[in-house]
Image (cartoon, rainbow, N blue to C red):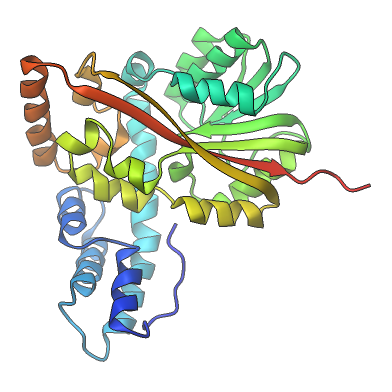
Length: 330
C-alpha cells in the first residue's frame, strides 16, 4: 500500500530516495508497460511520470504537484489491478499450485516450535490456499486448524484433501471468528496480497487469545533480490516484487500499532538441487505473471538450457516475523 508523503521533498537526495520507494526507474517502468493489459492509459501515464521523476528527467515548478497526483492515481489503480489479477491468477493455477507448491520444512518446524503448537492448540492460517500447511500441522501435531482463503478453486482442493478441516472463504481484513478464539494466527507468503494490513492486523489481534502469537512468513528485500533460481533467470521479477512486498521495518511498525509486542524475526532456509523446472513453466510463482511475456520466455529458455546441462542450485528462504498479543491486564 502506498503511504501519503509530504511532497515536494526538501532536497535532491531525499527526493530521489523517497521516489525510489515507489518505483526504481526504467526497469520497473518497462515491466509495467509490458504487462499493461487492462491497467489503462491513465495508469500507464502515471507510471511513466513517476519513473521520469525518479530519473530526474523533469524538475519544473509543477513537477512536485504532478508527482503527487501521479502517486494518488497509481495507488488507486495499480494496487486494485494487482489484487484482481492475482485473484484471477490463483483461480487459474489452483491445480498446478496444488501439485507444485509444497510445505517448507523449516517454516513448518518454526510454526510448531516457536508457536508453540501442541495437540490442544487452536490455529488459523490466513491465505491457506490448497491446505498444505494445515494438513502438515494436523499430521505433525494433531492440533485444531482453521483456514481462510478468497480463492474458491484453492478451497475446493483444500476441502477435498482435508475433509475434516475447518476451511472457509474469507479475507484477512474481515475474520468471521469470535474474539480471543486462537492461540496462533499465521500466514505464509500472503501479506503482500493483503489490501488493508492495518485492518488485517487489528482483526488478528482481536481473535487471538491474550499472549497468543502472530507469525508472518514473508520475504525481505535481501531474499527477493537473491532468490535462486528465480531472480537469476527472471531478474525482471525483482523490481516487481520489491514494489509488492512490504518492507520488514514497515510491517513491524504496523504490528506495534495493532498492539503486538515482543517482535522477533528469523530467516529459515533450505538448499538443494532444483528437481524440476515445471513449476516455473506453469508460472506457479505469481511474479512470473507480472513480467512481460518476452522476459518470461527469455528466462525460461535460459533455465531449460542450463537445467539440461547440469544441476541448478535451488534455495528457498523465508523471513519469519513473530509478534505476541499483549496479555490481558487484571
